[in-house]
Length: 274
Image (cartoon, rainbow, N blue to C red; front, side, top):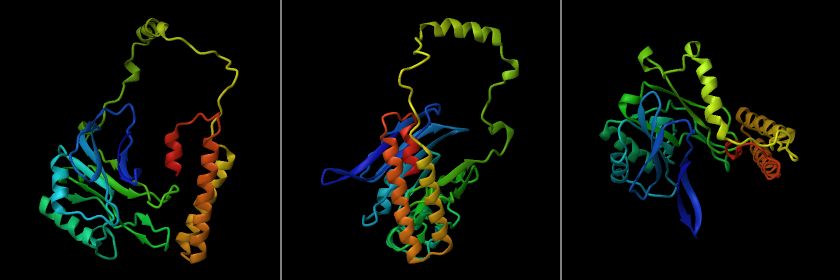
């Protein structure tokens, strides 16, 4: 995990993070900026730079800061995050100052925007939908990835955004293991030789661990999804209030289950459910 945060009264606030699977080859990109941004270089079908950014609602941003940031990102790159910027160019119904600045910056730098106009954010106070999460990229990457908004808030105010790579030719496909031609006898012998130095735990532990995500969590998440769909279909004040209450209950139920001493699942799942 790679993260950066600002501080308010010595407390972490806002911030941006990137989580990467252990089996993905990657390295951090050192940034010199006062923006809340973090970046990594990772190898997928090709080597790209991914930068996650958060711009607080009341902060001021200018094109010079954005250019300083993107100049530090090895090409090709994807810059994405919560910009708190409104502009019809990426789906908002109105303009704000940040939206105009980002529009001008993207145009002047010859960059592209993945957004297709879909809403990415549900305001928890008034129940309004907007598009304030933006994905900006080098033109060379625009046709390499699809962009879509997930239909479940997953307990957040922002809808998850999913990028999927689109293979355009056989040469671009990620190499796979040819298991049909494997030398399994050699594999078995090497495993026996190499794994002898790794000790084993007891086959029958006295206190087996239990997964924390139980039936109560499953029910709470299901109720949260139902209340979210109900508000989406009928955006009334009553349904919005009910959604906030049910979401809070789901968070509390999962948090209490996760604090059980017998938990056995990754905390990353817990964060995803929040």
